[in-house]
Length: 538
Image: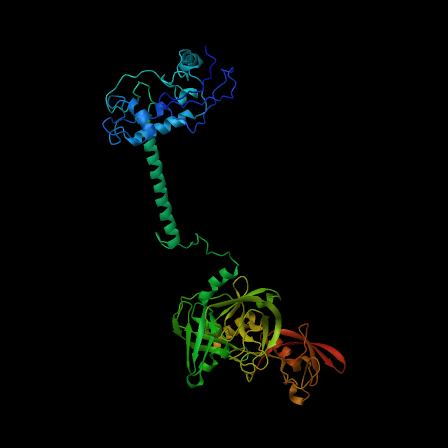
């Protein structure tokens, strides 16, 4: 075994180093002093390179390296590299050189048993790779790093054989990677490239569809699912959906006197429509049309009307319409939710909501000259001109009032005033009673007590005029004991503050009802009972 270092010596084909000049000042007795190592700028592995062919016929080149090494290589034979344009081209050589270079500088691997330390020792024992023998075959960088490499003679092969490369002295060059492995890697790379291209195409198409919003199957906007438009029973939307087909728009053409628009609703299956008297009054001598919810227009005639209650009944030639149900207005309380439906300002099928703001409001709807008095339901639901005659619904969808009047800011007229949150409706109990009378006879009856009231009285209550004929002889009041000058301060247990309040309280009753009055006379209060009778003048 040798103790010499295993660092590869100079390449066998390297040029001889120039002799180091002898320094006279050096100690001559130290013959074993090592020669200073020259600086190496790189390592050229013989098995990783290919010899440059010699051209004896050409003149000597100025390249010193070529002059030194050119003559040492044969110009013909199996070990001579082929031209760059042959099967063993320069690209092939570059690939082999790169592969060898990577092997030379790869991390050490576990030694193969066949080429382990024993084999390496044998190589050193035989003097292979010794710096003293520059012409001996050298182990490759791969072998020095722990990889196997063959440095023995290689039988000459046919020219152009690419299975292995060898130098002129038979040193085996590093074998190229098998062709099958190269082909497999090529297919894998091609597959990856194809997959990337396909992904790019799919992504581009998808992005185009999103950006351009291409419609492939109808609307691209979200659609409501089954049942998404249904509303629970008792909701405003559900009540409106049920009621709207029964609400109509009334158009009146009075000729030279102008035209008017109002609302109404189907009262029964015989074609009767209930509305306000002040809506149809201009059309008594004109034309009246009823526009249904589906847009159909029907000619209408007046069955009966009553200015005192501001109600009228029309008749159209339709029996297939669904009527609205009249509820009980005497069961309504302040704060109940309500829904107003009609055609405000000609905008048909309009729905607004609110609450019952007050009850028993004495209101005079219609023209100021008409003696119309209603004991109204007050609501803050938006009611505007054109809403008159439309229904006021409770949260069960029943009619509890007929929209009739609105309060206006002082100084405004019907053409300029709008809703200020003070709307009034005729109670359904009164509307039912009057509508039945109008359908049956064309007229409505009005209950009275048979007294004349003093409109100039400024105190609280309603004062009977002090004239001798202020109490109708034989009337309900006369029979009960009411006298001229009495002040009526209560009706059916409710306080009376004004004459209008007494009038609407009486008209809210039916003919034949028995009522109680509280009167003040000479500082005393009297409780009187009477039965209401029909107004003989009507």
